[in-house]
Structures are given as C-alpha cells and as structure tokens.
Length: 568
Image (cartoon, rainbow, N blue to C red):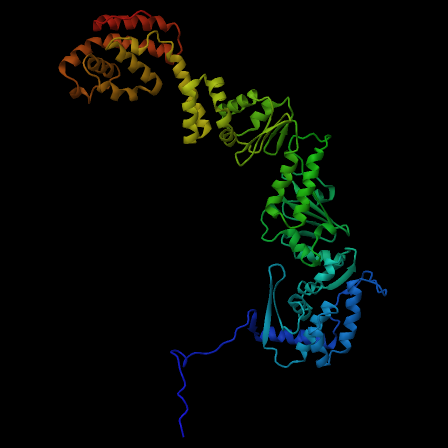
C-alpha cells in the first residue's frame, strides 16, 4: 500500500499559534463580571429598570411621532418576551422597530447566558469607559447604557436619538427623569450637578459661590475689579464663579454640570451674565450696545463648551473694551477724552516712554488699537485702545510706523541719522526705557557740544586733538579718553601727554611717550588745564558765561603750541 505524501511544513509552523483577536473585546475581571451579573439580573427581573421616571408629557395618540411613546409601548412587548430566547434573537437583529428595544433584547439575551467572561469595551471621551456584553445589532452606546443602568451618566447614552428629537433627560445619583419636550431639571439634579462640578462651591440650596467671592456679592450682583460669572438656573439657584476659580479648572465647568443631562445644553436651563465694567467707567453710563451683544456671543460660546474657562474672563472683558469708541482704553481701564494726562500717568513705564507715547498720540488724526500680539489697527472712531498697560510693548508695536516721528519731534533727529537709529533699535530690541534715556542724554550732550566755537576738523594739529579729547570726555567721561591720548602721533603725542598730566593719568604711561613729547606736553599743561576748566563750566555746569573763557584758553593753547587758530 502506497504511503501518503509527506505533509509539507514551513519554517516556524511548529511553534505558531493561531490567535483570533477582536478589537474592543477583553476578558472581564471578577469585579467587572460581578457588576454585570448584578445589573443583568436586575434587568431580567424588571426589564423597565433602565427607564427614566416620566415627568413630562408623552403623546400616545395613534398618529404620534413621539419617540418616548413608541419606546414605552415596545418595552412592554420585550418585557413580556424576556424569557423567550428565540424571540429575543430575532428582535435584537431586526432592522425595524424601536432602536432602544433592539439593544434591550440583546441585553436580555446576554442575561440568559451563563458565560459572561468576555466583554466589549465602550469608550467615550465625555462619558468614560464601560464594559458590556455585545449581542445583536443594537448601538454599542445603547447596550452599554442599558447594562450599566445604575450609572448616572452612562444610562443617558440610551436616549441620544430621543434627545435629538427634542426630548430632555436628567440623571443623578438619586434619580433619573424624563421631562418631555421642556427642559425642567429637578432641584435635586441641580444640587447634585453643582456638588460634582469641576469648581468647588461654597454654600448650599439656591446660593453657591466659588473661592474669591462673597455670598453678598452674588446676592446683590456687585461689581468686582476682575469680574465674575453669574449663572441663574431655572429653579432660581444662583451661582457665582470668580475669575481666579475659572482660571484653574481641569474640566470646563459648564460641561461638568451638563454631563448629567441630555441633550447637554446648559443654555436651556441657565442664564449666564458677566458682572464687570472697566475701571473709570461712569456708574450712570450704560455699556456700549455693541459690547453687550459681543458679550452675549462669548457667553453663548462658553455655554456650548467651545470656550475654555481660562479664556472666558479675557474674552468677556475684550468684548466690552473693544466696543468703546471714545476716550482712552489702557488694559482694563477707561479714561475720558479730557483725561489724557491721567491715561499716560496710569501706564507703567518711564517718563521718556510716556513722552514717546504722547508724541504718537499727537501725530494721530484717527483712532488706534494696539493689541497684545503687537498688531496695530487704525480705527475710524476717535478712541485710543492699548491692550497692554505697559509702555514698552506698545512702543515695540508702534516703533516701525511712528519711530521717525518720535526721533524728530522729541530728539531732533532727522534724515539718514534717524533711519539708522530706527533700524538699530528695531534689530537690537533694547528696552525702550533705557534706549530713550540714553538717546536723550546723547542728544543733550550733542546739543551742548554745539556751544564750542570751533569744529575739531577746522582746527590744526595739535589743537584739533585737544578739542576731540574735550568733546569725548564730555560725552563719555574722562576714562574713555585715556586710550585715545596714548595713540597720538607727532604733536598730538605731546598733546596726549599734556592731557594725561592734566588728569593725573601719567603714572603708568610715561614709557609710551618719547622725551621730546613729554617736554613739549609739559609746557602745554597750564593752557590745556585752563581749556578743560572752561569746557567743564560751559558744558557740564551749563555756565554759558564760560564760553569766553574757553575761547581765550584755546588762544593761549594756540600760542604755546605755535599754531594758528582759524576764524570762528
């Protein structure tokens, strides 16, 4: 008898194990299996256990399109068939009929099985994670909600289609209600939701408040410097949330409250208001209508969970501040048109920076808005809006467009020199306080140096070298001239030695100068000393009468050096 052909084997076949993996399926732990066992047993005992308490109207007329009416009617049918395995198998895969009852049939079938060790996992970023047994064609969220019917949030998942049709559900630890087409949350639900919100609240009953607020502030609707959010629920409950409390939430407050309701529309059960006005705004003056409209848009965006808690205060303030069309707005303060000095004084910065801001304002023939991101907007309205209250960031934003105006009007710098200073500061990005102060000192010295009757270039050597040393000493100090004095050549070397002698800086520099230069320079010291004394009086002490002393001293220095002074 012929042998059968040898079995063909491939490398690795011997150790290979075939594993079938289904996404979202896992072995249930004892804890999960025990919880599901209890929930399913309760469901078999009472298939209506997952239903909410009916507190709203249900239209049970023959031609009614009320989804809750249809669900309630079919739940009774499924309940009666809960022990009919064959019937449940057909119902859980049936395409028609009530969608909730399809998941209910699958859950009842799972309850009839002895082995419940393999479970599916439902994951939702808002509702969390839940284990359930998947049977039939029911929606996963419905199966998870029915099999976790004692969970205050998960059981809401069953009613998503009903909520889309305009029906309302409210679930909490102590109950689960259906209020029909009218959002009418029980006070118990509001209390529970606020107790479990993302911000800790003080108080109880119909008055709650966060850290940073007092109950009297909430009751009386009092203004605060930073502003606060006021929420009033349909049952009259008042909630106050401070800016500091809103700035530190890990979960958006409105969302944390609304996750116990379906649909999660907080705006249908609560009214939101931002209680604030700019500092300096008159009590008897209404806020701009455009600002109130923008404020309502911001609050509606927050109520739809599309705006973070931490961004709410700034967005609310900006909606009001950016609608003001007169006077001066700086940070969160407002000043009327006749209070420009107060506006400038309020800004953080040096006197030089405030003067530069004032110079820009003087050059405007329109309104302006400088934003925190550095952008500058021209406005038709006659208003100045500076979102930052410090001078420096505003000057950084304004420098490219108004820097030349500041240089010309305040410092008298024009043309190519102004362009060079403008570009240098734009690249260097030095603090404007220091930059303008240095610029002021430099221009002040430059203006003083014009008092000297001769230009250095017009003087012969070594008088020109003496004049250069005087000018540099006035501008940058005597210490800065030592190096220059050492580097003179010819007669300038002798004048350098005389300069160091006048200022008693020769002790370590004698070796740098030849004997002839030291001899000549020594003879020139009295005249150079007189020249420096006159320059100090004229330029440092602002004694204008010393101008004649400077001229006579320069003539004396001309005589002792044997040089000819040019005409003035």
